[in-house]
Length: 310
Image (cartoon, rainbow, N blue to C red):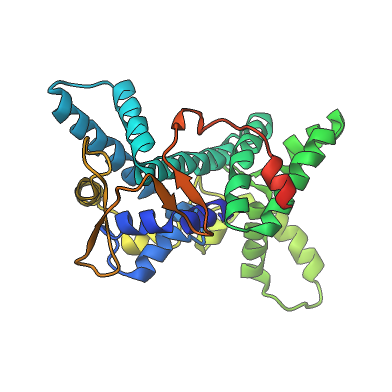
């Protein structure tokens, strides 16, 4: 969840601009940018990513006058990133969105394979935490990587199989801290928050019968169901065709992937537009992102900066 929040903070100018096409108020946009539940983005973000690739495909197809391959679209987007910093910023956001998705996938994989994927994504997330000044998470991430590297085979085995994830009664793995949180909420649903005589024996009984009970709350059902919906998804709903159409229209208007033209973003006033012809874009925190060769943007590289920052 903190990775998604850091992502929303770092890429806020771009994400808010695009998401405004489907979320018409600041509160609704903030719900997407700074989620309190990682599942809040899972329905809409794939549509946002698809819209970027769909617009790039249509623009390149129009230029070439023929059907183009996925490889050609990918290379075309990289070329746009090399020429325009705003396009490079959009590509970087797509990469970090994929990293956040991989981190969620590591939870579902669980055990050894999930641990490997999680530590790979953590190395990328640490860069995002560093840039957005999430000092506590930089420390946690660096300490965890260092501990796991120095741990004995027995310690790694214990971490992989007993600490990294826990399995629900339906056989679905969830991160250990989230499992504990849900377990506490589930037990408090029946026992309350105040101690009384006989509470210990009742807790033992309730813990042993978790798989047999039907949770009355969404939090409790997550322990049993394959995957409960996020707290707000039912309220807002999602209309795939409508949302995708609006996102495509917005990205097309921004000219991010239009060959031979500079990208356009909205200014401080709704009716004002700004042409982004500069080859450098200033990011939150004063970081400057120049137009660059993005072919190596997914390389893990060195963790020197997070370690020094820590």
